[in-house]
Amino acid sequence: QAKAAGRNTLRFFDQEMQRVADERIALESDLRQALALRQLSLHAQPQVDLDGRVIGAELLMRWQHPTRGWVSPAVFIPVAESTGAILALGRWVIDSACHTLAQWRRDPVLSGVALSVNVSVRQFSDPDFLPQVLAMLERSQVAPGRLKVEITESLFAEDMAMVVDRMEALRDAGVRLSIDDFGTGYSSLGYLSRMPMDELKIDRSFVDQALLSESDAAIVQIIIALASNLGLAVVAEGVETEVQREFLAERGCRVFQGYLFGRPVPLPAFEAWVRAR
Ligand code: C2E
Ligand code: MG
Ligand code: MG
Ligand code: MG
Image (spheres, helix red, strand yellow):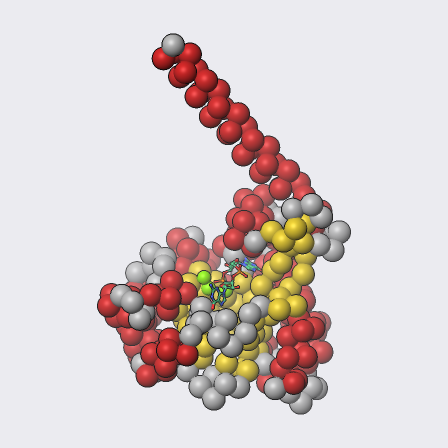
């Protein structure tokens, strides 16, 4: 009896694992075609300064799957990373950012807005990454300072010489570098002084808890102080309430991103929204 039950449980797990694996393979193959089938799009989320002026936006990838509906980037980006599809997707994001910035160049309102793009470890580490970015900037004739590349601390686990070289080359070209989700990774503070960078983004989880947990409040303060002492800009992500905004502003944060100011919306809607302000 017990043995039979055990066998059934095992069979259930087998089936479940098989289902998860099948699901993953289906997702992988759908993702490979997503770009060509125009199922991917870019949303933009505003970044505002202390006076509420829109000074930048982050581009966030969206996937509308024909049967699954909207698939979250939290689900498909890791899949794209593991299959290598991220290389094509990431190139498309940067190309789109350059095109958009070129279109904005003569716009009285949008010319002052910078664009941030997320670059995954696999993409950054690819030998074609740097020449591609430089070529796209050149082709679009965009002032490179308008393009910001967001990387995460996980990149610092890669070949450090390669990472620093590439960061320096990007900065030499005028591209700005931002460390995303700062505080959630495992980089040592020593890296910070050796790494060429421009900005730290305080992870949403700390902002979220800052008013509820003393230790998260302390982490937020430390990140702001650290950025200021290293001469880096600091952006708070996931700001949802005015109380959070005040807390951050009182501690010296000057740039904010979050639902309080605007959710990520399709690029054309973002452009209209900025113009209407
Ligand atoms: P991220 O780069 O840290 O982006 C911020 C995420 O927080 C976005 O989620 C955004 O929609 C969400 N968010 C912004 N403000 C708020 C807020 O006030 N409250 C809450 N609850 N959430 C907020 P999203 O768009 O789902 O993207 C998730 C992650 O997927 C991104 O995190 C990024 O790591 C990755 N991702 C998105 N687009 C790309 C891309 O083009 N390339 C790469 N490599 N990764 C991407
Ligand atoms: Mg980001
Ligand atoms: Mg982030
Ligand atoms: Mg985050």
